[in-house]
Length: 160
Image (cartoon, rainbow, N blue to C red; front, side, top):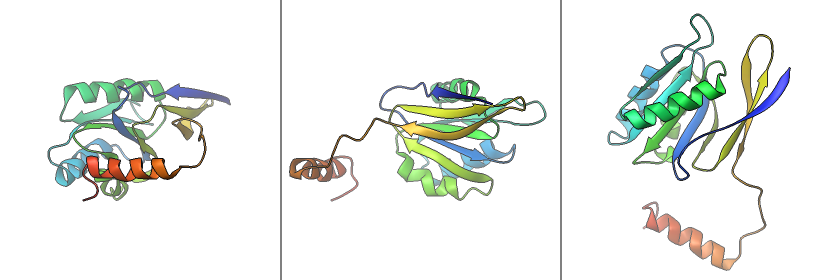
């Protein structure tokens, strides 16, 4: 077995969700879950099929985001993983809905940070072991950091 890291390629401030599911209808079910939860959100989904034709299945409502999802899914090439890129919303807007899709097994990350995916490869195939989400923690927040955090939540509409 060989361990590798695959960097997620995306614009610096773009949010995405990386997860694992178990069935070919994942792209359709995720699509429906997103549009029913946040109808105006733009998104692209790609899903790595792990049997049969073993293709990247995809859906979405924005060609550019679909293309980013396809590119990253091909780079990962890990069975039954899915990746969703979004604009006009945040992972927190759809995360519980995504987790409640019946074939979703787990979520590895939901972030806009730079991400490296830790991948194991054997003769059979590839699988995701985990992710490196962002950078190394630098210390404890101070009073000014707490103030910034609270103001930021208000700025993006998550607090009055």
